[in-house]
Structures are given as C-alpha cells and as structure tokens.
Image (cartoon, rainbow, N blue to C red; front, side, top):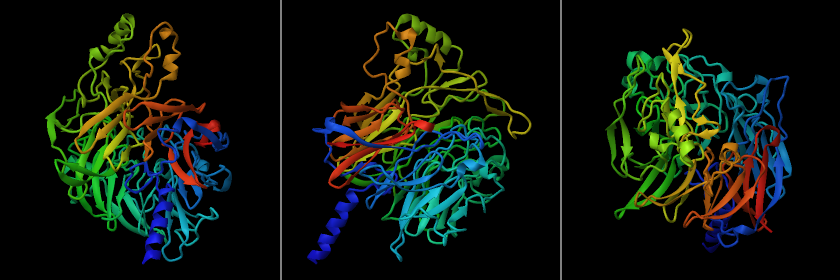
Length: 616
C-alpha cells in the first residue's frame, strides 16, 4: 500500500513538472503548480536558449510563413511543437537542440487563402494504453496526422500511412485549400477530436462546414460527427429560415476545445456563420453559431448549449478555450465552465447543466439599417462579472492626450455609425468596440484554481465594419468591405489603454484588479506625439494569452516585443525581457533537471524564434 501511494505521489510530481496539453491541462486553466520561479526571484530570469524555425518564403510555391503562434507541449523530457509551416518538431527542453522534425509539406498546396498564412498553435499527445507508445497528433491543412513521438515518423496503422483526409465525408464537397486548422486536437481516451478553421473572407454558399469530428486514435476511423449547423429536421434547424441550414458554412470551432476528463464532457467554442458581417442570406437565430456547446465526448451527442451572440454579424466568434473552474458562490460549490469572449464578457455556467452561474439578461440592441438584414432584436448580457473591456464607441471615447488630437479624432469619428455594443455593421461603416480581435481571443484565460481567480489578457481597440453590395457569385446581397481605418495619422481614434490584464474573482463575479498591459511601441514613436506626455503603459492589443503559476506570477507577451512577469496579487510588473520580435504566442512552463523554464514563441517568417528563460 505504501509503495502504491509513493508511486501515485511520484507520478503527480512528474505530471506537475510537465505541460502535457495545449493549455497545460485538458480544462485549459493555463496553470502550473511549479514555484521555483516566484514573485521574489523572477527578476533574476535570464535567457538560456533559443531555437529558430528556419522557415522562409518559398517563391516556387508562392508561400510565406505566418506568425509563430505555437505553444509547445513538454512530456517525458521532450518538447513537442508546431511551426508556421505546420512542421512538427521535438526539442531537448534543457538546450533547445532539435531531436527530430516532421514536415507535412503543407506549403506545396500554396498559400492558405485566409489572410493570416500558415498559422498553427500546437499539437496533441496520446499514449496508447495497449502498447504504451506515445503518439503526437497534428491537424494540418485538411489532414490529421499521427506521429511516433520517439522518431517523428508517421504511424502506418493510422489512416492512410499516418494521415486522415479531413475533407472526406463532409456534408458537401469542400476544396482542401479552403479547409485549415489552427488549434490542436483534443484527446479523450482513445479518441482524437478535431475542429477546423475557415477563412473569414470566404463568403459563398456552401463554404467549408464547421463539423466537429472524433476519430479512433489507433486506426483513424471516424467515430462521430457533431453538426454545428443542424441538418434539416435536427434540433436547432428551425433557427435557420428559408432553408439556409442547407448551404451555410463556417460556424466552425477554430479555437481550442476544452475537456472535463472525469465526466467525459467536451466544450466547443463555436464561431460565426458565413458571412460574418451580413446575415440576410441566413435569417434566424442561427444555432449553434457563436454558442458554447457541451457534448458527450464519447458519442458527440449534445448535452446543452448557450448562444452568446444571436444571428452573429460582428465576427464575435467564441475565440478561446472555455476554462474549467471550481468556484463557490454564496456558499454553494459549483463546477463551472467560463467562456471568455471577443465582446469583453466572461460567461460562467454550471458545466454539467449549462445553467448560468449569475443571471444573463436578454436586452434590446440597435437595429440594422442594411437592406435585407434582420438583426436579432436582443442579445445576452451577463450581470456578473462586469465586462473586462470597453464596449461601444461615443465621441467622448476619442483619443484625448491633447485638445488638438481629440478634435482630430472626433472629426474622424463622425464619419462612422457610433453606438453601444452590438451596433450592426452598416453601409456607412460602424465603429465597433471591442474589435474583431476582441476583447479576449484565442489565448483564453489563466486560472489560479486554488483561489478561483481568472486572469484575462484583452484588447481595447475598435474595428470599422462596413458592408457593400456583393457580386452575383457570392450568394448574398452584401459582404464586408475593406479599406476603412480606425486610425488618423497612425494614431488610434480612441483613447488608451489599448490592452488590459484583469484579475476576476469567480467566487464573487468581481474584479480584483485591472491594469493596462503591454505597450504600443509604434505609437510611442509616432512623430505627431513627439512632445506629448504619454502614459507609462499605453497597453497593446494582441490575441495570445497568459499563464499563471503557484509562484504567484503571471507570464504573458504584451502584444509588443516583450515577455512580462506580473504579480498575481496586484497586477504590478515584476520583470520584463525584450525579445526583439513581437510576441505571437501564449507561453508555457515546465521543470526538468531540477530547473524551471519559461518558454515563449515570437516573430514572423525568418525571425520566428522559441525562447527559453530560467534562473541562473
């Protein structure tokens, strides 16, 4: 009995030193119990190694690698990561030396037509309970690939020599070039579960569908499919009028999914249906667009759902992984799931029943003035916690660091339709805040599970959303128009800060603290602001997230070119390190050889780099 207890203890210690999932754990808490690096010594962190992807534009394929947004796994003394060109690489976690690399040659299909390039954020791992072998799963450009973790070679028994074709079996024929993957799969028992990415600029009927599917992790055989746009006659199909469920694509799960392993519950953050800014061709509420959906992970059957945006018109996808938390509200223990949103809200639910932790009210919102558009008359407003980002735009939100610049900004603001959150896109152009990147985005939140405090890195910049008449090939009357800017002379039309870091007490639904986070380096060097006294931190927008450790430290890139360490108790900056490249990923941490490391990816193209820090 003592030996068994000792074995369990040693296993728990080893697991605490690893980072075996994209978010640290299947519940996407982005939390580590490591505390060798803590608030008292974090200022002593030094760079100990760096690794460069070595990827560059390939003229023969007309490709250019995108931002390096990958967060590695660390399992059994090896780092596993994906690169912009969708390579899978194994590194020594103490030195950054490459062990093996697998190249799916994703670039041979040309540049992804998504506007962001070869974006990929990570891989997933599965250990075969029969053989004990570790497999690494990568979803790349309409392919699901299984690799031997020791050698990096495809597993021949999986699919077709290690590869499953992800466009096979979809509800309608789909061009593989239009079907992408940005987030890693989820592994549940012997299933590997995948969503997909679809370019927002695709605005046609029968764009790639957002079906979520589970495959047998050994064989690659399809086990179940969940249709995010219900088929005719299925639950929710009546929310698609004029038969629009038969041709509407997108409604995909491009963000990371979350798993309650003990209960076998899978949480899907679903995105906006096609096309993002005009819903005249899909009248109705449009389930399960912009919804948090809970499935039975073993069968794909829906357990519950909650739609956070009705009839989406703003590209307000559910952008990040739901976060699992154990909270106590008015003396009542709740196993909760919290969905951070681009709208700037954190929606909290009982993760088993889907019942909101605090009331969510349906409130009237502005109507659309675009011909043929019937915006939904109400939207959900949570009563707790308060919004962690500013919402809506008025003239009083104008950039105001000098009277002259304020007048300039207000003059420019008058060119747009202004209003509260959920003011619809318009022919004139609506200034929308939060913008299409949020609020929160794919980085999600970081949870201290012992205190039930959720740390949220967010953006506070507006977007111009303007629609224009579409061509006959589109299948809808209007599409999003390009060319409008929320800047004047390189200066945002709205006042700083442009990003925040917020601590939310999930037991009370209240802020603990909220501080500007990151810095807009280009704005600080703008000649028009040469003689203007600027805030110490302007804040910066950015999609990556944060991690938090038992050492009382939050680590995050600021959306600028630095990695920051912040005190969990008050939001004070404890340390920062310039990387020389814009931070483009959520960091991670692990311990090996008795030393704790903090690792983050940064850069784009040739300068894409993975950097590791530790105490000397």
